Length: 145
Image: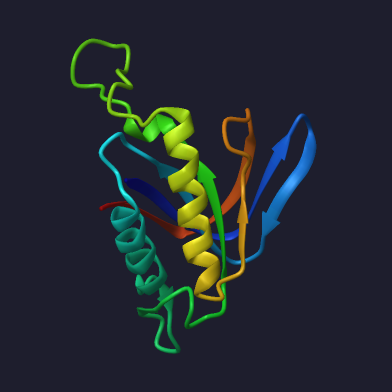
């Protein structure tokens, strides 16, 4: 399971030119689910993301988590994170989980975030989405579990 995490001032998802979801300050999490991923991977990733100290404290040091600052999370499924570009110029998506399995772990991941009382919005699984964000910092991290 892979996540590209961006600290944002705000972020939103639109589908067919209509607003689907939005958050204020917090984290935008692009989530890629691979064939070998399990609920245990999702548990570890949610734990890591919820505790990442990437928000500034009173001394302007990245020392606070999303929970410490009462921020929000927007989770967007993105199977292209599982793409392998090592050979040639066309990515291989062989490692990506099949949609019926990926959606289960994606929804499980979102439910785990919500169980921590973190306000959480989502994109729409398998939809063509327009994602807009204002990256704060910028702070962008790659996390795998």
